[in-house]
Image 1 (cartoon, helix red, strand yellow):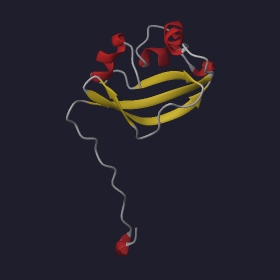
Image 2 (tube, rainbow, N blue to C red):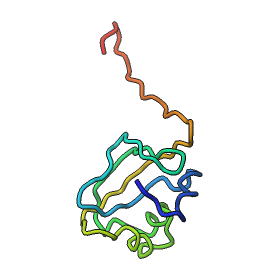
Image 3 (cartoon, rainbow, N blue to C red):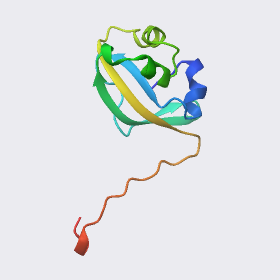
Image 4 (cartoon, rainbow, N blue to C red):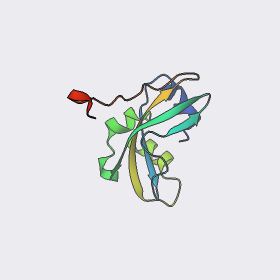
Length: 109
């Protein structure tokens, strides 16, 4: 995932943890790691939404000043599928926490 330079500091600090993308098809997958600067973006979820779902609050959460500002950045290709991607940033050298499966009694999994 690529972020404009003005958003990268907010992503690194953990203030921006979601992004709206307009693509022909999803370019990322849940659990995927994508380089950003020296660290990595880890995708936590991806949900298909509509343009009507993009609110002022969602635009602000994504690091933009308005819905119009977000759409100017998000609408740059010929895609028309809108995705809400939630993620977290791993700084250089950091490890993502493992997801442990619960064990059932008597050792059954």
